[in-house]
Length: 124
Image 1: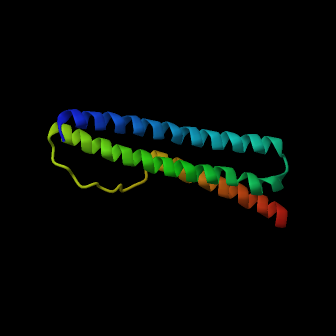
Image 2: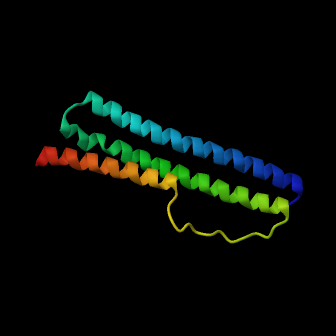
Image 3: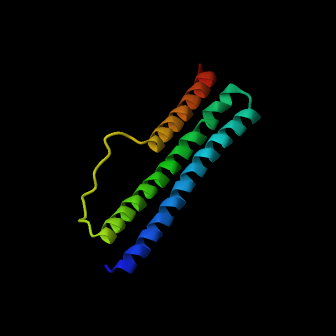
């Protein structure tokens, strides 16, 4: 590819990455706030069996957005290497989850705990 095309590709992938990163944080914030709002509206413990699915679903959607953000980052990195004339490198796997993945795990676990508390109150 010529240099101008690589610059355009880099800019598009950078904008795409920023877009999915913003959506990730918006989904996390929305699901947490919706969970808190529903919890405030329905003060019975049994309602937690249903309310707890909100953060679980939010974590699932945010995980998909995180994968798209990482894919855009990989494409952006490849375009940058092409601009600098560096050889293409094989993608390396992560040895540990990043902070964004840990937030997803925490949100999903919190939702699962809420569901468990609600079910225990219903059937226990």
